[in-house]
Amino acid sequence: MSVNRLAAIASSGLISIVVIGGLWLAGSPSEQRLLRLDQQRTAHLQQLSSALTRYWNDHSMLPPQLQQLVDGQNLTAVPVDPVTGSSYDYRRTATATFELCGAFDRDSIEASVNDFWSHQAGRHCFDFDLDPQ
Image (cartoon, rainbow, N blue to C red; front, side, top):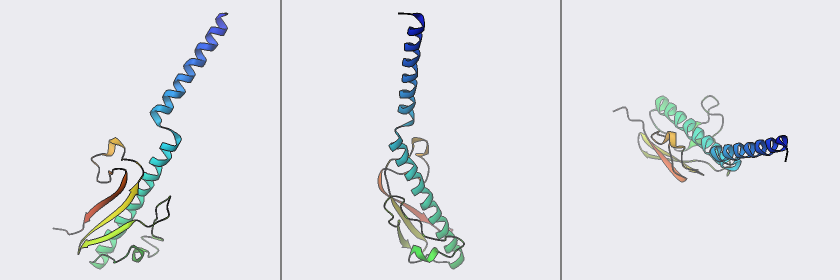
């Protein structure tokens, strides 16, 4: 076997190892898609919580339904789950408290475990308290 042929085989093997290692570190494309969808769900819930806080500041009350947040400025439409198209769950729990819930495909990324928006896979609710005291 010639030196050139051995070099070609070795470099092909090295490239294969690097590609497989990269896919293992980054995750499969389907896994990345699920994580991206969860990030979109989190962004939607953040958008809703901000709109609910603005509504509270303007009206000193929480709306009975999310649809009342649509005013063309804060929200042009109520965001929905990017896969199912269903609404996120919203519930007033007291005069100045509420919860927003969504269904996630995966646990939060490890770096954000202590973040308010961290979640487990499955249905998860986030609790909010707008009382200034």
